[in-house]
Length: 618
Image 1 (tube, helix red, strand yellow):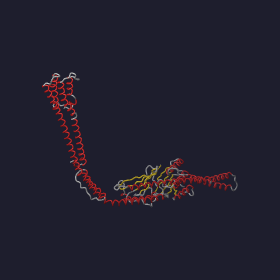
Image 2 (spheres, one colour):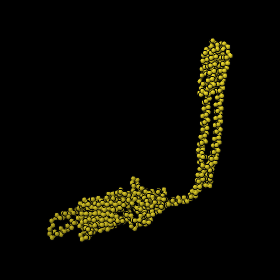
Image 3 (tube, helix red, strand yellow):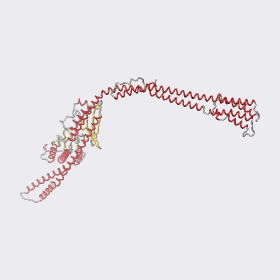
Image 4 (spheres, one colour):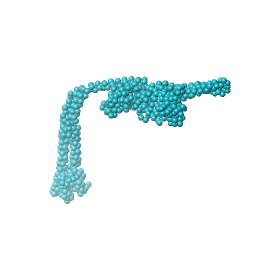
């Protein structure tokens, strides 16, 4: 049953039978040939013994005294011939074998009858009847041995012929059986399978093999029949699949156009939120994904911070435009989006430039549909575009900071070389006038005029020093927080008390010019608090109260006289001018628990990459 089920096994059995037949035939032939090896020599030697026996009889009757060899030596030589190897080696070793018994009987006839008769016969005398009879009887024994050797050899040869005939017949039967099996179970099924393959090539799936049996070709035929059925079904579905691929290509084309237009928007506006969110939302609709979030990496922050998102139920902390609701969705819509708890999967794509990791793009997609390779490649292209936009924006910011610092340094140098020297000269002239001895009715008027000139010059000189400090001030620190931290430490040393700093402002929310103005406002307010307020506790707060930036400097000093903002105070005038430059307003008022609060708020006008970082220092 097993051989009927396996064509390979049947073929192996047939090949094995042929090989076995050949091996058996060759082995038996070899054994038979080896068994009759030396028989011809033994027959010849046995036949020679008959002739030698008659020669001995003749020598004993006609003895010649001048013979080259004595008669006794001839007897000994004949005895050696009886025991020579070519004769004894062909005899069976078994003692009960007829051939061995005949040989032993021949030896006994020689040793007990013929040889003693030859030895007793007088040399040169006529042969007696008894000697002749003994010789004939011995020769008869030798003839019997030769006959038995010949019969044994002929029997072995006949056996060899039978073995060859059996091997030949068996080989023919195996070959016929193999041919019939190949014709019925290989050639005919193969023709059917070839016809089916040709029909499938012509898109004709109606041909069937209909092979019965359980061997390999029968199973292959049933597999072909199943394949043609499945091909007929799948070929019918090719049209719909091609249409689906066409729709996918159209979506990819639309997504590429969207990426192209978005890249122009990003590089034109330099604003990720306004430039990327609408594009990402359209991309979500096209690819059936979302939400998409962008996290940016900052070396000053321990964790990546969220920069933009396409779907959120609450306004993000970093949002500066409260009139924009592009990323806001209802809680019901948000709950339906893919997430860890809603059968969704997340794809993280790095946003990087050579040698620098700028951020990570997080894309959620439905777990049941997966993400196609086309969509993945489009998202990788998007991450490359975002990396370029963020990198260029950082470069622009650094160039703006450098340009602003260079311009202010030039102005400071010009003020120092021109106006500062002129004021110094006027102060020296006033000092000279004070040393003049002027008496009379104009003495008092002269002194008042000198006091006013001195006060005005001192005020102008102080203003000039503040301007020089302002213009020479630059942000050579990684960010505004670090610059404020250094400023707070500086004024803490001057006050003799720790100045607190509470900072909660998104990094890069401000332009370089806005950062400079905030730093200068804080410095001026701290200088006033230390110089005029006699404060022992000063606190600086810089908060992002979306969408505004709020700056507060609080102290526990003696407060403002009369509770009102001083009129024409130089430091406050500088703060107000800077606040107006930023588009904000300054408020200076006494605190309820004592001291003064200087507050200023404004909405940043710059459009920059937004990162969120909180830094609180006490």
